[in-house]
Image 1: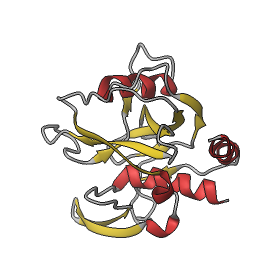
Image 2 (image 1 turned 180 degrees about the horizontal axis):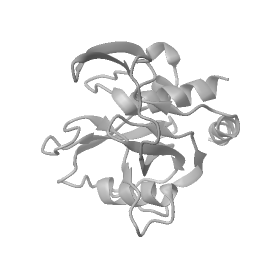
Image 3 (image 1 turned 60 degrees about the vertical axis):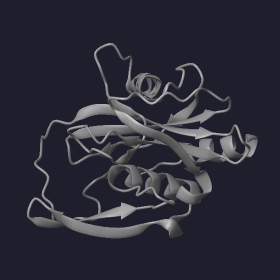
Image 4 (image 1 turned 135 degrees about the vertical axis):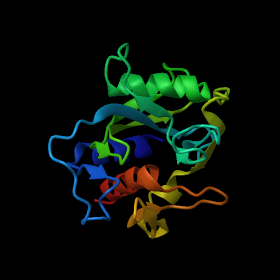
Amino acid sequence: MRDLISNLEAALSRPGHASSDFDLNPDVGLPPGRTLRPAGVLVAISTVTGDPRLILTKRSSRLKHHPGQIAFPGGKVDDGDADVVDAALREADEEIGLPRNLPQVLGTMPEHETVTGFRVTPVIAIVDRAFDTVPEPGEVDEAFSVPLSHVLDPGNYIIESRRWRGTRRHYFIVPYGPYYIWGATARMLRALAAQMSQ
């Protein structure tokens, strides 16, 4: 595990690049001076089994925004949060029952702009002890994990597209078994894979 932590810390120390949901769509014009809301997501890597695994959630199918999509635990920064790291840890506790004092935060990645108007900071953390996963029923249908090696392999990423607001939008996917990991989650993971491979 020491090698994994060293490799992650080295990757986070290298200058990365901000990303966005529009990276693969250069024709999209973004309005200057737009207001983006700060948010934090927890890229939690469990080392409990020895094989590092990334903890993800499947959002509730009853949610108004992004129902059923695969996501990191996390959300917008609330007034009571000290910063984006605090927001990510709070949300992970609320969404999947991950105690706030359990993740070992290694650092953050460059921000990711979403199509829904958020400026998301991925917070990289190691979880080296087991915890009782308790999905929050109103927000999370399932919490699961995928091998970290799968999402760190650039060869596992595919570009797909669909019609969105009258235009064709391209995006990354990194499928794993029954899980269709795409959009902002896949884009942030692709950025992590790029930083790790430098």
